Image (cartoon, rainbow, N blue to C red; front, side, top):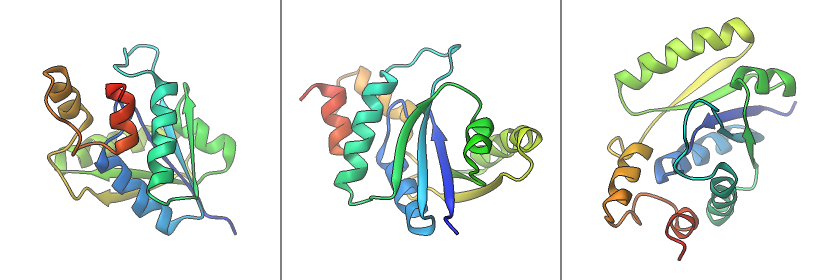
Length: 157
């Protein structure tokens, strides 16, 4: 049986912490869908298709070959249900992340009751997309917080 999982997020931008969660989940599952979620009510800092291409390059550079990166503008639970994916991957930095994720999990279980959550502990709890965006907006060097392919995309270098 092919074990598949979904790892959704805004990935605005995709950080080394996200890549670490991809690495951990790809070791456990045959196929991992890394889904860039697009919410029409939220303004993205970085274009979803541009980030998708940078993520694909970063994942390839990391030697991970069982991940599919895609952009989706619907409900994550519906994405999983439509594709018969029964595992949702989430990364946790702290108890606030856990509480937030558990609230979303309850809603997703209403949509797709068979969806099970797998939590991975983040290794670098200080790194977040928000932190990277803030540093980047002040022209701070962010190269140690994002994969090289994402850095190239963000800086145009």
